[in-house]
Image (tube, rainbow, N blue to C red; front, side):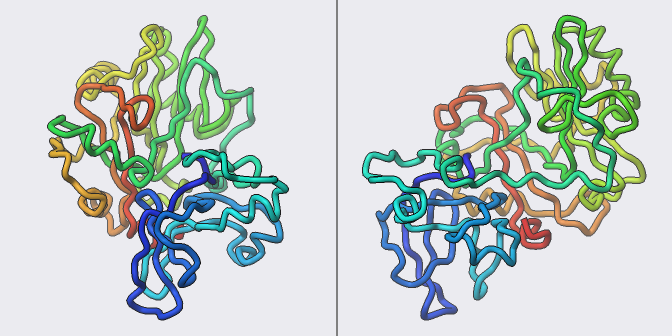
Length: 335
């Protein structure tokens, strides 16, 4: 989902710990608002968590937070995201009218709202060799709060649940005998950095040359990366995607498992299979996402859910794959 979009207030909920506040429901999110600020059915400019607002007059109240939108509790009520009055579009952005905007319209660029990128301090991220290669999609799972309709799509569909590892994503691909080793957003020059360290540790260069038509994507975790919440003694790679570059399709769970077993690549932790009824609620999935990383006392970031057999989602306009982030993790780490 885009950082800032035009949305509708679906519901207003009473705030049980404040006479001056209410809770607005937008998509699958709840955000604390001033009492009377909105009513159900109103439109708003909605900025999701993990976004950064611009240093502008209309965002001045966020300066102490360095303009970053995080999950928080306000008077014991969970607040995720910020709902602004659409008037900011005419008052600050100079738009003449907003009546023709469609629900879901991306307002990020015009408002200067950007997705928050986790800092790479603590490990050697390397120098950029160029842009992220166009022949491989970037790694980015949609949050369930932004795509609740996918639950109905998955009714009676056997799914795979894996642990979301909190680290830094890496991509390894090959095209025309040229190998790309990438961070989340860039191709990285060979040298003393975490991405090439993983490429050599797991013999990924040889794997790509042998397999030729595949790209490998995974999460790197370990000392110096996001607080090393898995408490690993050294840097490790956890594969979560293998993509066939000829068919432009991802391998399903079984196919990825066979690929990783053949080439001795570790996969993200498997949590189990689950068949949806289609009646699950957001709260059901959030409960499934809770827990600790194995052999630690650290809240895990959450889970990723995919069907056992790859399928297209009309809700996601693409691959059926989404993440459910653990709210205890978000509140603990201010994300």
